[in-house]
Image 1 (cartoon, rainbow, N blue to C red):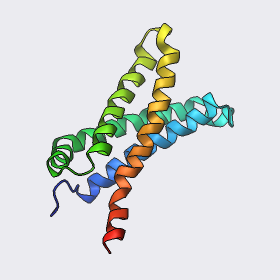
Image 2 (cartoon, rainbow, N blue to C red):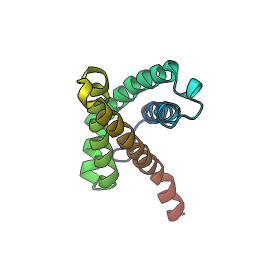
Image 3 (spheres, helix red, strand yellow):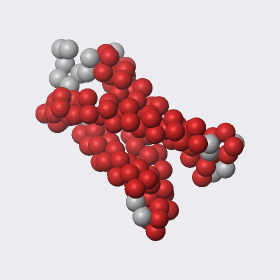
Length: 141
């Protein structure tokens, strides 16, 4: 690891796969359950279960980068907007996800809406943050 904030390959793969799996399963469930596209398949309990398991892996991935990558990114002053917005969105997703299961019934609809809107925003920022490295390398070449 020669660059500040650069993750080892195993960790980068773990983070990308964990976040992508969580985002994709969440998107599939959103399409099936909220937008009624192939509801019997995409809105099924098995997709929701896969999303829950992927969310646990994504949380582990987030924990693996917090002590090193976040500190290095803060010191480098690069990609602050995408890094810190991801952190904020992930906090909102963890809280809204917990409220979906453990919160009062009166706020469930608001928690559902918050969770999927923030989830879509997170996914877009995650893609930009993750793959901007490739775009920057192409511009330098």
